[in-house]
Image 1 (cartoon, rainbow, N blue to C red):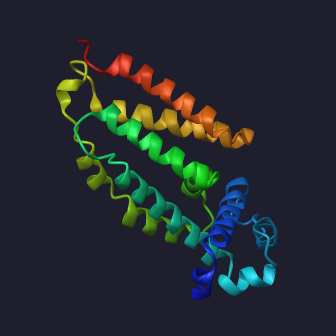
Image 2 (tube, one colour; image 1 turned 45 degrees about the vertical axis):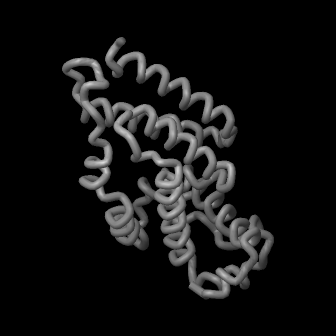
Image 3 (cartoon, rainbow, N blue to C red; image 1 turned 90 degrees about the vertical axis):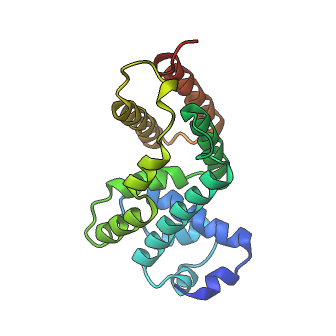
Length: 203
């Protein structure tokens, strides 16, 4: 990647990043044209190739930025402070909504990355995922006080159920092209209210 990309004004960098997120989130890797990304960012295709040697370099750069933005936002919002699961989730929701307001298609892009099977990039994506999202490390972070939950709750199954429900919601929104961030925030808040009603110990 040409270091001159980072010498661009932040607003222009954000335009290129958002354009990449948008185009890659709506198409497969193979069917995402660099020309469309350039047009969406308001620059020429040749200039985009000046900043990024090829589509693979841009794609992996965007994935690294996605992971970087997410990890930083979760830390800034204190998502792993304290021992209350839903308190942590609510902070995480605020962090992610703030990111979505700045990068509206980033969450959809991240979702597509996990399901992208193109051999040209899948190995590099897996390597990056292992670096940024270590499952054992994240599991340790999620070691919340067990006495807050209903007796005999299978915590691993509970985490999995909430993860799959969240992922399924985002996948459906992606298929519909629904980018109403306020509605997403409201829907996820309601989902958490429901999960609290079934999983948390009653007073």
